[in-house]
Image 1: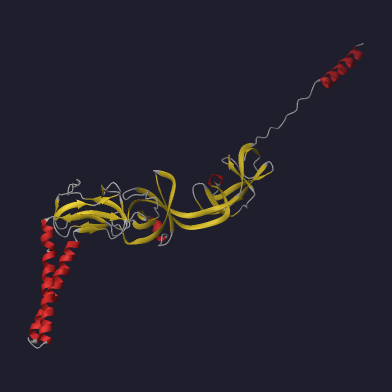
Image 2: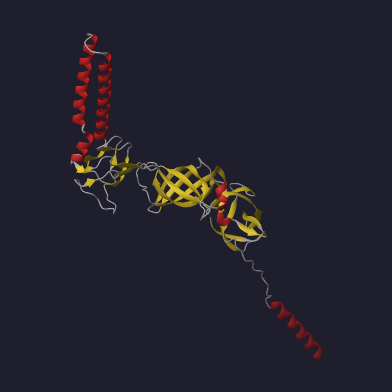
Length: 358
């Protein structure tokens, strides 16, 4: 009985082991969540960004030639007084200087009368000489007197003309009839010789003076295209072009002054404004580009991660022109390939990934 009992216990144990479920170790593999994007084509540029200030390309100053009383011109149907900021045409009268001093300085009526008298005297003596009644010397003297009288008339007319201050260019009135303290002068106030009545300048185009530093000095040259922006109009780009480089550097800042001529048809930019100028050194169109954030550095190499099914392949790339957002790819990837643009911080070659967006 004992032998049979032992056999029974062994068989029972075997049965229990057969009925017990076997546990199985499952291997869990982590996949890095990433976002991907296709390599596309676009335009890239090499540029120099600098700040500067706007000024007029040229300024005309209208000054008093003969002292007198100031009278600013009237404009428009309402005959209002010309004001700073108004547009004036070439040849338009800006102001007139009137008064007794002006009249005396011109003496136009007196000189014209003397001229007519000298002319009649010359014509009379010419006839007498032809009739043999006077000597030739008297005719020569009368001719000289006539020439002097003609010169005096021309001087008087010129002086009288100078009482009208006329703009030689079309432009905007930057400053008009202000005294040494900057206060506006009323009509009828006396002005002296040399007083600046007005400053006029064209405001299309304007010039942006920008300073270029360091290695960029060797890359800028006359004729390069540029664009200018002002914070007041962040979406508006004013096209321009480099028109002049200063012959010397600033001794204090070691900067090169660059003049950028800027198109300003709506007269939005005004002298004194602070602007940002981008000088475009080189432009390449329709080249392969990738987002700047898709480029990582591994062991001193620039790489991107190309999607291959559920894994990524590390691909070394050679970069070209670019900005803070996109960069040109000279070699390493082709347009149409999908690369990781988010989540590449921990990636390595052959890492398994899970695409969460594209």
